[in-house]
Image 1 (cartoon, rainbow, N blue to C red):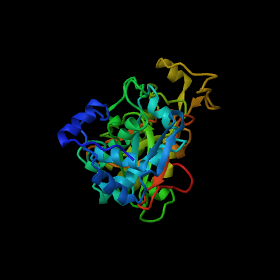
Image 2 (image 1 turned 30 degrees about the horizontal axis):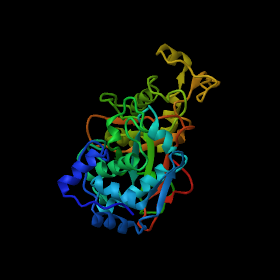
Image 3 (image 1 turned 135 degrees about the vertical axis):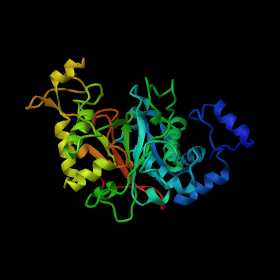
Image 4 (image 1 turned 180 degrees about the horizontal axis):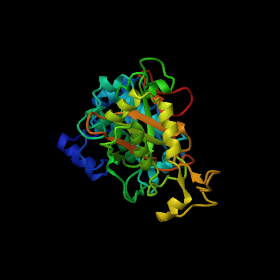
Length: 357
């Protein structure tokens, strides 16, 4: 069981700052009653193990997760989503140790799909990747505090981020209802009706994509593909899993023109391929006989995504002037894979269909 301290609210905030237990912002003191309330929502014993990082010989209990969830400002009813996110991150395929320690500065990006988006008040239209929603901000922050306080991912200790980005405070993207005929992410994962899923991507910062004047939705996809094949992005030419956020005008126009999500993925995968010459002209040298063996395929091109299925299409964002967004992965798939879990209030989260996105 966790140690209990007798401190006033103000003293507790400063005490946590002094010990490096915060992300640079004040935290909510994790009083026993608040921690117990969160644990009660998921019906987990305090010592139930949610997962571990073997390389660090550290294990995450439900109690430690609840403590950090309270500190982050989460409501107790958010805790099932926090548990699902953490169990996805601690899946060996995600490779949490490398993600949390690399110089690449990856954020733990959570993508939420299902009825809990509306129920908990996630931002999923305007400002979908911005500030203002307690659910978006605190759930992502809880995951980050666990990374710091349980697994030691602190700057200068086990977090070697050279640059980092603001998503390392919190990075949660909630899916809005797709256009008619398009499945939600949780439906694509084969989950039962009424389910909510949390999908986790080790992500670089989002790139906002603009295409305000082209009336042809195909042109918008070409613009997105150009962002996906930017030579300055580490994974370009190496094959990764990525998230593409289809903004309001983009998704509505594509659906109206009869594009399916699978057709969009295939188009983006094809048009994001890049030649060795283009990489080299941008000053990027090909890696050969290394962890990333960048040998062009028969068409002379290298993949930016490993396959169309490795593009996670997210419908989010409100009306504007044709904005979309792109979130590259921190590293190619041999280093980290997207993982997903179903949210449940009955103990541990559930692996969806035994597969990842």
